[in-house]
Image 1 (cartoon, rainbow, N blue to C red):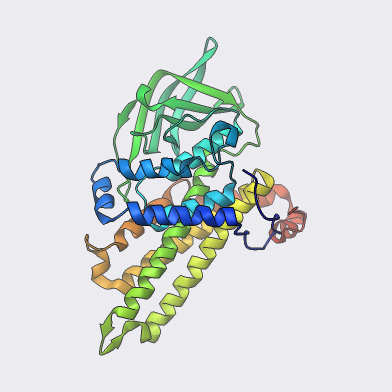
Image 2 (cartoon, rainbow, N blue to C red):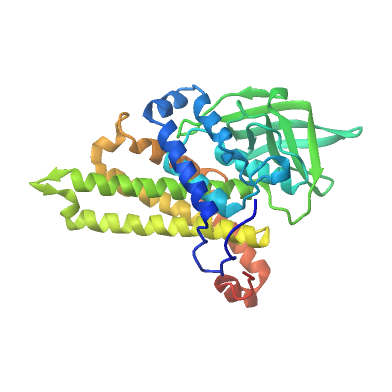
Amino acid sequence: MAREGAPCEVGDAPPMTDTRNMIAETAERLFADHLDTATRVAAEAGTWPEALWQEIANNGLDRVLEPEEAGGFGGDWGDAFVILRAAGKHAAPVPLAETIGASWLLTQAGLDAPQGIVTFAESGTIAILPDGENWCASGALERVPWGNVAIVTLFDASHRGNRFMAQIGSSDVNITADRNIGRDPRDLFQCDDTPVRARRVREDALPVFAVGALVRACQMSGAISEVLNLCVTYAGERVQFGRPIATFQAIQQQLAILAGEAAAADMAAQTACRALDRTGDARFEIASAKIRTGEAAGQACAIAHQVFGAIGFTEEHHLHHLTRRLWSWRAEFGTESVWAQRLGRMVVEQGADALWPGLTGLNASP
């Protein structure tokens, strides 16, 4: 599908073309129509939301980054951002972010993405070894998102100093079910001489860990925006001492801080997606996005539960579906401190002369 609109300059807001507006509206309408509290509660108790995922697949949202010739939408990371933001806003209990990110990684590695759910592992102690013309793997993959429902799981691997993109069939491993604080599946994979597919990738190819950080940043930006919406609405409705608490200066200050954090998270995630479309790498921007959205998530959760008080912690209220996932996503695929260290190393490696042009985009092309 042809892309609409001219490329944006560094520092500009990403263009919302007619196509991207259509994608954003489709995602928003889909989640609003097919995801409610009962579905979230059931999913967190272990029931797979089949109807919700089927609607996602029917609309092609999970294949937004796959080429048209492979049956995908042929979109870019700007398109993926509006989908992932909507999924985060609605606390969608499905592996949409993982499937979008893993499918893109497979395409970049020259591998075909299978039809269905694809995920990737955050970490693990696993080794791949050649087995004739094939490969086998032994070890463990930890905190695999939605590993129990995925067809294959991707992970970074190395052999004799070379980098590989490896994929393992979920049906070929021993799975120990687990969940994060958001109550989404984060499973443990254990394998012993298990057949895998592996493809050598360039040393500068974006690793699974970085793509995982990017999709989590996009999800967090959406969840933070919805936390802000909930707080503003509640503060306008909750009456204390004869007037809405939104009229209290202390509450207004907290909401102003939260609005600033939401805007910063949005811009950080959008900028990383835009940079990845422009350069194909964007490690610097991804690191910055994961740090900034993680910081915003911490502030958003603290302020929201202060504004709502005890009611925000109750099982019946929607707020905790967002804040529990924000706490989880903030920690997954690298905390702020992990990415701050990586960012610092990038700056040092590039040298002092590259710092200012890198920050201001003076050497970047549109």
